[in-house]
Length: 113
Length: 116
Image 1 (cartoon, rainbow over the protein chains, first blue to last red):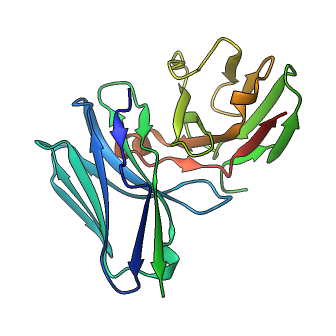
Image 2: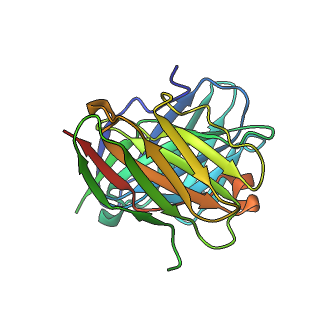
C-alpha cells in the first residue's frame, strides 16, 4: 500500500526555469507534508513543509502547494539552479500521536546549465 | 559532532550473519527514526522512538529486525540471519519534539549494507 506516490522518477529542467515536482497521497490522516532533498552519498535534508490546513507555503525559491481535495501536492523551484540537482522525496506525517513519516520513491531532478 | 552520526558507513556481510548498525542522534533530540532505502525504492519507515514511550515498530519487515535505544541517546538496529533482500542503505534520523510537529528530521549519512 503506497500511501505517497511520486509518479515521475526523473525530471530535467534548464537553469533559470521553473521545476515542478509532483506528489500524490492516499492517507487522509496526514497532518503535515514535507519535502526532503538528497544528494548522492548523503542523508536527506529537510527542505520545506506544509500543514494540512494550509494550501501554500513559500520559502525563498521554494514553494509547496497543497490541494487536499485532489490529495495532491507540488514543489515549485524558481529559478532552478544546477545545485538543485538531487533526488527530492515527498512525505506525509500521520496525525495524532503517531509521528511516523511516510515517503514516496523520490524524483531525480537534473538542472542543466 | 553536530549532526547525526551512523556507523559503520559501509558493511558487507555474508547471508545468514547478524549485523548491528549504530546511530548517535543529535544531542537533546528526543525522537529517533530508522528508515531504509533499497535500490530504486523510496525511504521505508522501520521504527520510531520518542522519549520513554513504547517505540513504534510497525515498519520492521520481519522478526529478524530489532532496535534498541537507551534513553535519549544511541540506538542500535540489529538484523539477524541477514538475507540478500536486506541489502539497503539504513538511515537514522532524529528531531526535537517541536521538529516532529513540523516534520523536520535530521538524517545521518546512512549505513550501506550489502549482503552477499
